[in-house]
Length: 488
Image (cartoon, rainbow, N blue to C red; front, side):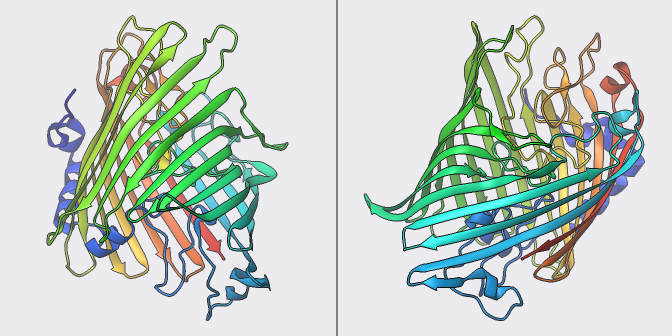
């Protein structure tokens, strides 16, 4: 089904959204081309920004084991911890972070039964040790504690809000092995997985408790390409006890990333397989996700694009599965004061037809970073949804970034439900044939006060559409947050 025009959507005809759209178009909010090209594959913060780095030192990344401190840095208070020499070819790196966040919801998810106005706080602490023994052997372990207070919304303290003390990463790696013209590495143990722009596979850094996996990963790196193959189980989060691998769910596959010299064009090809054992009346299911992603900045121009899409085939018991997803975005970054730019895009994730077996045609979002996409209010997941968006950023100072986004949402298939960010049914279709779900406007600010300190804040406002009004409470929903992150 073709994407609907955002300009013709009723939510874009309201006076407030018209004004916001006009401001976005007038300001051309985003990052400069050079920074965008250099950061194309960097792990992104929840608001889509890349990690800050100094040209002379590695960046602090969201997946900390990706950092390379093999060269001892100098000039910062924490540098003595980043490369501690223990012997010839043996060294240790120590790091971590503390993040605190306050959130407030008003008319949570459009209102309804239970508490819908609430403020609560989240806190997490991570510490890791990265030991390199010889040029080829490495051990990495990262522990975490995550707490939550006063969340009285439906669902209470969520599984992803609290972990009383556990292991995020713990693996042994054999690396820098030359074979067939490439450098190979093999990791086994508990580890985060992050692919592409995290629409499908992500550690979900926005969550207070990050997602992780247990298993083996093989990487081969050559000139301008990286091949990653993995065989894992997702780790089940148990807030009051030690987390364990979900042995009833297998997740394996491979991804090839091609990035020619110059860093302005990147192509991914991926194949993922998720298999879930039968449980009670629920049959064994297996989905194969095949897809590609292309990111490019056009030479000698302020324009670029990103396109990602995939198809899913497989079976749920005796029923075949056929689903698909596509997301496309075109952007412009102009060399004006305040580094303005603009992105216009949209996405489609399929739903199931009337009379079809449940989820037969509904896209399975797998393990995404849900918060960075489909609006910061976290109303919708990437299942049975059409989205149109305008996203812009502005840098009033080198360390300050403003972001404005406007979204409109519809059901891809009017016989299917709408789904929340974890992928559960948010509103069943009932008797409604309406396509319009609603619209959302987000405004966030990020200040990187120092190399180690980052401050974020934001506001999101979701306006329910016809389908929400047809199926229950449909009050306007507002969400706001403030966060402080200290990293070393």
